[in-house]
Amino acid sequence: MTAETWLSATLVFLLLAAGFFFAGSETALTAASRARLLALEKAGSRRARVVNRLLELREAMIGSLLIGTAIVNTAAAALTTSVLVDVFGNVGVIYATGGISVMTIIFVEVLPKTLALNYPERFALAVGFPVRLIVWLLRPFTTAVNWLVRGTLRLFGFRIGKDTALLSAAEELRGTVDLLHREGSVEKADRDMLGGLLDLQELTVADVMVHRTKVFAVDLGQDAARIVREVLAAPYTRVPVWRGKPDNIVGVIHAKDLLRALDAADNDAARIDPEEIALPAWFVPDSTTLDDQLRSFRRRKMHFAFVVDEYGVVQGVVTLEDIIEEIVGDIADEHDVAVSGVRPQADGAVNVDGSVPIRDLNRAMDWTLPDEGATTVAGLVIHEARQIPEAGQTFTFHGFRFQVLRKQKNRITSLRITPVERTLPDARKT
Image 1 (cartoon, rainbow, N blue to C red):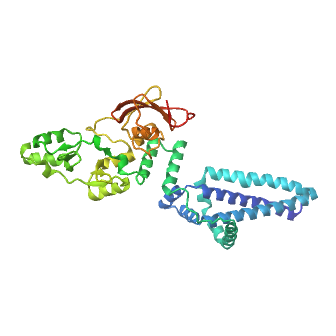
Image 2 (image 1 turned 60 degrees about the vertical axis):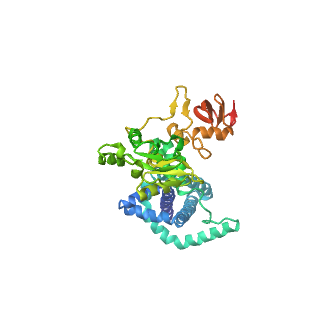
Image 3 (image 1 turned 120 degrees about the vertical axis):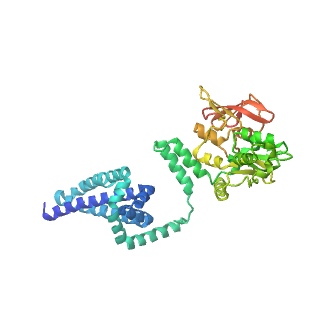
């Protein structure tokens, strides 16, 4: 072979190395985790800062790398053909086609992209500076190419960059957390906590409030001594008080304020006026989001509010603890009454109190029962069955069999839920 042939062969290998660089860089820069790169940049990494700036110019970066890949692959194919024709004659064209195809697939496609997919951040940090130089050199060319591409797509009715993203940032983050949980990188407790935090903007106080039928309240019409006994005997720090009828809430007594009043009265309960030490009642609409209510709790430095509907009727109470529990799960202290309402059975079924919130059941059992149409498990059964069922009736929907165990008047108090195969039609009654 002549010196020119050797030079051409050397250039072929250099071009293949350049193709390796372009293909690997494109894959690494598109697969690298933005969160990790931002963390590295905050830690002071110059290379991470360069990569993040490149990702902000995503269109120009990918265009430059694709142009570079096309140029080196075309040049490598032409030079390989020239070398093999010089060595083998006209049959060298066939050898060149097979040889360059194999080398391109292995060394320019599969090998660099496999490496980049397995070590995206490390690869991206290594190629950040040279890619930045290439993007700067090819910028006029990539701008022209992008303009031509956009114009061509516009002829077919596509408007690049005009469409709204299908997923919001919160939905994308939730999907990422769910994916990491399935892969084993994020534990269930951490996934639930992050999911609860994202749900604060979607849930309302009506979704987490304690219903008025379960609210412990004290009648101010009683004598002061009995009111003091009831408040101090209750397992709650803040106790609503009413006068005339339970719906006529007039305030909230804080146990600490009551103890101070008792101390000032030398422990003589008869000398205390409970209504005077009661804090004013705070009423909030049932449509208030948890995010807004949390901010209101912090701003007003209060932990307790009454939830009212559009007619001003009290529906229940919401506390700061209720909102925090949506994030971190159930919080219990030494005075809480332990009533979970969810009792797994040995056969895989679960006995559930009708008043258990669907969200709490989903979190406890890692299920995905819908909670859009109802808040509690009993409400879900009534919503799906379109009737108030009797004890003993069974319904199958959403992949579960719901058997009504007990009922008091129009309230479902206990159910048995069994996961079943999703071969039965929804809302099937037996």
